[in-house]
Image (cartoon, rainbow, N blue to C red; front, side):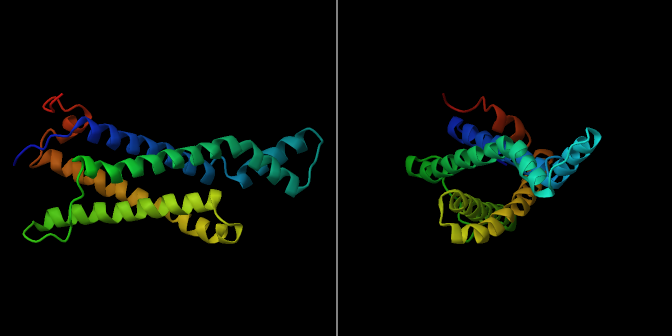
Length: 192
């Protein structure tokens, strides 16, 4: 099989999106685990009890939310970065880079159809996450709760996509596309 070459623009965009998503997942993981407001409230409550001090449960929750707020701001900043990267991704085909592949094209193998369909779904879900995130921050308050409910579902497509993507890369590397990992990191065959 022909070895695909990846342009510098492709590689920079790919890794920028990958790193941004990874950092975004870290903020979600922290919010759901160690920096969960209830876990933090319990730690604060234990500390206050040890020092013969007290606050109401509501005050402790407010304090817990304030402690984790700077970390959560990173989630928002990363969302802005991803929105910008998504826009760049949409514009690159206009300049002959990273053309979108049609999953409904005839005369392609089932493997290629599946791969293209996975990316098609990914870009729709990616857009949904960006739009709902922007609505949460800038949209009308009466839609905030609905947008948050939809936005939270984004973790499922993201984790699923990462698993499918990494599995596909591993399979490709071990079968018909040896060297794909090194080419997406630093493609020495790309014209400079």
